[in-house]
Length: 344
Image (cartoon, rainbow, N blue to C red; front, side, top):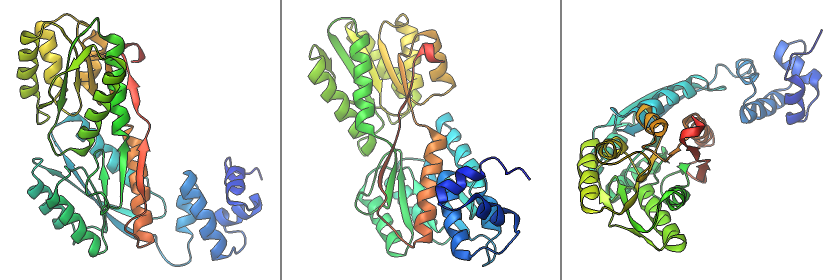
């Protein structure tokens, strides 16, 4: 009988024979539980489709249930809707565990609200991942959860460093430097550059600002970065503020929207400038940023690989529950996806 495609690859990765893999998958002869578990661990690690059957064949009953808590922001924004969809899909594709997802959205960035929602997940979830600002109230909530054996992972923007179990997202310092690099290449002559951040407590935005300013200070000292503007990641505030900047600074050469609200910057440029007259760097590929790239209003989009993010954090969450550990993951940096008009 011809061996199933992929058996040899799994056997090589697990350090066993193809015949052993065949016996495990088809039940031809008894294989030790130690070997089955070892092969299952390898299959889970490399994402081999045999993992589900190996988990089902375990001798100690059905796959364990893990209750995943995920807390996100901005339910109305396309990016977070996409993230929620990818998280649900990733949980459904898990092998070796039965995933139960409790996914909620915070109505605001309020530390008190987010801290309360995190605490509210304690009785319903075994492990939690969240987007949140870096604030003492949230750190206190994470510490309470940690002491109760519930690990909390930060997503996209880090928080509760030294208390949370790990961070998964982009290297935000590099995101800022990459944005500055693109503006430095696109800016026509000396002038001003504007920088929008979502709020003073977003650790990821602080890092993006640091990287952005450092790069331009080193490579384009003729470009003056104006005082950072807090836009609360809202379209209208970004639109009104960008129009004001364009009216006051005829030499505005570039804009970096380090968080949400990019739609307002795009609309303001459409109202007051020609395409490519002001370099605009924004975050995350959505319908509006894609259209902005295609039409020349957006110069660069830096994006998070959401499927990778969801798989990475779920793998860490599973390991945390299995090993009853609450730390040690550190920071997991995902590759930045860069999009320009010609790459669409």
